[in-house]
Length: 254
Image (cartoon, rainbow, N blue to C red; front, side, top):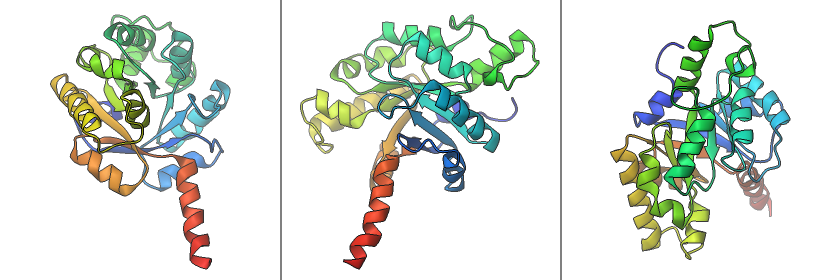
């Protein structure tokens, strides 16, 4: 590894931009997203039906194009996390992280010793089928792979400071729809409860030197959240953006 990694830049509070893909797992999507200016692509396995086998192909394509492939797994369990990394993910997003204990289990599954307990598989997809020594590979992968904890429930919010304090968790990512749902204010993103929640997440991230992430559905939301301190952002959803583009043309003809 040479230069400053995406993970290092995120944790330093630099602006790092990408796209979140839920539906369009086509061979060309990584190139399309890269051509649009994205530095990373986050594939969704929680809601979109993506399989690990499909992701392995996507990760290979993205890596070959110089755009970092990452994935949101369904849950923060070893069989999803370690396998996704072995298949070539440069980072993993975990939904509904709600405690420091859960965060520590996530770190164990995603980091090699001494920080974690990820099982060893060298010369596989994750290290480019390379021939580096085990120590070189483990050091490089621990430094490269970004671990993103989603704060999107009232329980996660209550424990956000403790979650942020866990070494090996790199980014706090707001799941804004779920967070408003669990706060009893579904979809009310200007509600004082939600605004206070954002302030608390930002404060926890800054205190513990973590990246702060958000998925923006439009430019206005992206700017608002960047001003609040969320410098790692992804566009989304792919379905929503396609729908808006088609509707904008067709509505002009009606």
